[in-house]
Image (cartoon, rainbow, N blue to C red; front, side, top):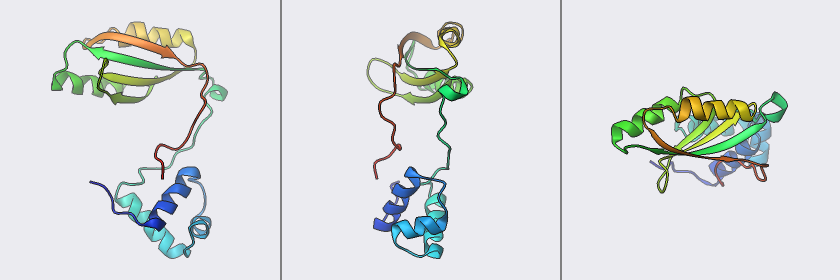
Length: 154
């Protein structure tokens, strides 16, 4: 169900997506309202599930995670039970940072981050392709990230 948002709500979301660490006073100033109603609006957006949380964007290479890759995974059978089972198991794999069920040539798209190529290869060979539901895996190693924005255009 889509949330009913006015122009001020959209300004709040735009500002928080760009900088989730700003104070409520700074946010209120940026969107042109006083702090108390700004805080009420933010709380309402959180309670409605429009704002799901606040996260720090980390620099993976500086933390020793030099490899980013995507895996396109095709399952042997696309029954609801198999799709749910595979989706559930992705939550257990720390190397998989995001996962989507997709349409087209593959059933799932996995965003993976690993320390190095060896660690990623070990995951693909020993874990991913060994999963009972997996039929095919196509991997794409990234060269360089060229764009990084918030998830939603506001």
